Image (cartoon, rainbow, N blue to C red; front, top):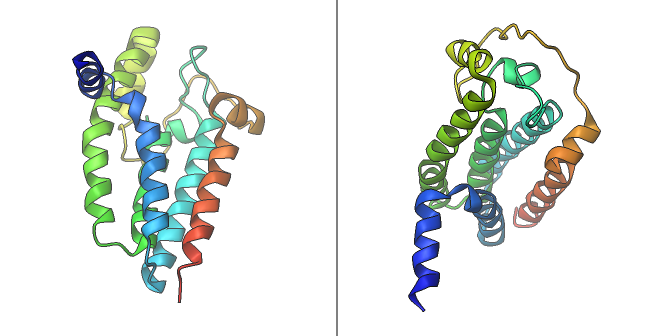
Length: 188
């Protein structure tokens, strides 16, 4: 039945966001299972993974999905802090694994999935929050953090429960830490 393959190819082209999480999870598991960690790269990779987890936890506790434009917390520095956290985690696992092919694979995943995802998310936020989003976008880059925070009109506080409820982020952090621990078993 050609319809299955046709739909899959259509989804890859137009609905890549459906595959972003699956691809990220698969990448982490693959490099953890195949990994041959080397101490120096492993230490650098672990630092990046922890940084990425921290950024993701911080960002997910500030999300105000569909209610308000999040411009406080990490969103005062970068428009897509969850993606910044994902990128740090991905590079961290690539380094920690010690596999030469993991870095080019991760870079390929980034270029295949993230530009499209950023564009779609920006379009959606622009549609919902027009002038507020335009002002924030003018002063805040998508993935490269500002050195000084954007001055948002609203201020919120970080919430563990929001992080758990909106993104399941503490569970994701535990998943990543499990695979990082798994990689440590390959250290000599």
